Amino acid sequence: MDPVRFVWRLVLSPAGAGAAGLYLAYEGLMAEHKRSSAGIVVATVFLVVSSVVNYVQEQSLARRMARTNLRLTQRLTALIGSLGEISGGGYEAWKVDLYTAHWRAGGSRAFPWFVRRRLVKQAAVSIISTVGIADSAALVDEGPLGRSFETQSAVMWFAPSARVADALDCSPHLKKETNAALEQVCGAIRTVPLTNHLDADCLGVVAVHVEPRFAPRFAGTMVLDECGTRLRAAALDLHQIITG
Image 1 (tube, rainbow, N blue to C red):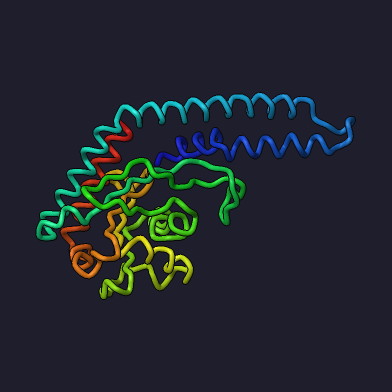
Image 2 (cartoon, rainbow, N blue to C red):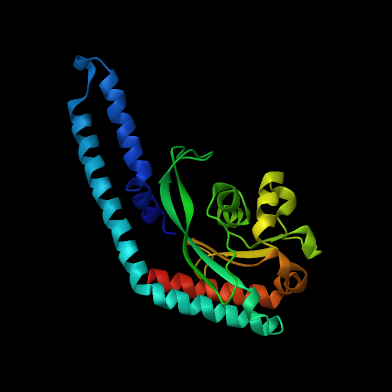
């Protein structure tokens, strides 16, 4: 991303608004004769402008996503068909989820500490399966989805029943509670960050997964290079659809 564009987006992001709010709170704690009237006015105006800009951006993204929802669903459905081709016709087993990142208030270990980008499910497609990943912190933020988004890299996760070992398997690095919760709804997961062709501008994560009962049959398909190639191609198309 261009440095100037990055700084501009950071300043007008909720992080910038939060900094302005902290400054106003600091000024409010000072004695009246020590307060900076100019600083208070500037911070107040900035806070209002930042709030309006963020609101407009969120609304613009929501409208754009509504207009492109059909195209997203079509591409996710095509991905299921593509996975079915390389897995010997097991179309009914695959489920595809699209998560996009949104700024949300909350604690974070990195700056800014009071807001963070969190993954929100944007679309989900499956032929028959109705079992999906619950949108909880344990399964999304602390699981393979969150790990893929934070590292902006492909990640896999396999339940013990899958009987598959792969270097990209993140299960050894997750909490025992997270692995146990995932085993209730998933047998295997493969994710890829939703980036452009330069592996930049990450907007979220695309994940394919199967239910626990399908893990022994389809986990081997997930580790194939062909699976990764098709998933990456879908992520590029989805990124282009979202950004227009």
